[in-house]
Image 1 (cartoon, helix red, strand yellow):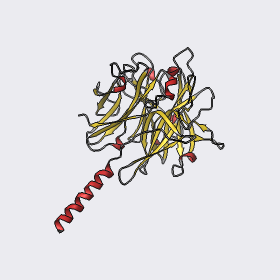
Image 2 (cartoon, helix red, strand yellow):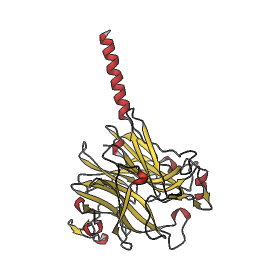
Image 3 (tube, one colour):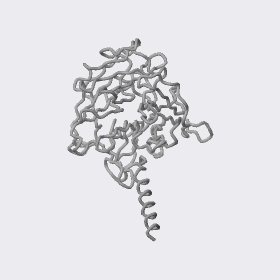
Image 4 (tube, rainbow, N blue to C red):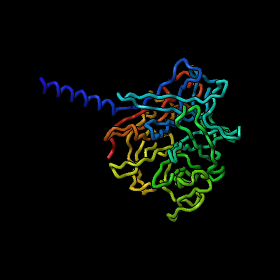
Length: 364
């Protein structure tokens, strides 16, 4: 009986440990809340030192339900989420729609120019603070479909302090980073490595390569002054001149993840195939952060974009990125988001414009 009891206890403990190690993200609209989260894109995740993860969302639908007036959804331009995993391995996510003293919804990050807005992108933790890359956006100068009616106008870096408070009370300081007009704005992804924050940007020229910049962690208080870029001769140089930069990837992406896997001794990038409106997500690998990067292998066909009679021609998918902090051993976990050119349908098609989570064996 003692042996049977011991075995039962051991199996129960192993089962508990197994459950505790599984914490898979999932995203769903909030119900019956005036400032409820109803959908968003981007979905970068940044692990904090206390076990929480901060999720970064772009244009965010909010309210008790989705609402679209003409081709204008009710939304803020960025929002956050704070996720935790409990002892049973259950996922919990607190959505954060920032609001003013009267309870009116606001973008979590807002630029000084009222014609501009920010799409909040990737970030990192350093010096005890959370740092988030902000892509400046403004209306397009020439007519474009409602879902594409924008152009970029620079990038900044937000510093979030006092993370022990509730996220509505975090201090936010926005630092200038790269001005408009040079065609590449660090925001695609970010990672801390060897006492630097590495920032990546797609250069809107030619084949749209990915280029690299970095800031020493000791210089984050003045990021624009301390910014360096990897030049075409392989030397890190002061400033940021994308036309003279080394092409980290010949074909880049506006959104991706680059993360290190120590067990594989590799850097791995997860991204959509950069041909535009693709149904394929690929993984690239490199021995060093700045390359050389492989052309990549296709790892997933996005069902929403797959050709066939059920394909909605208005749907397009993007924003593929990995979230290693939620992976089991030997597993790959990534998200992507689908949107629609038919903006009014966002109000009725509640299956779209939510981050989709995919888990699969880690490709070798």
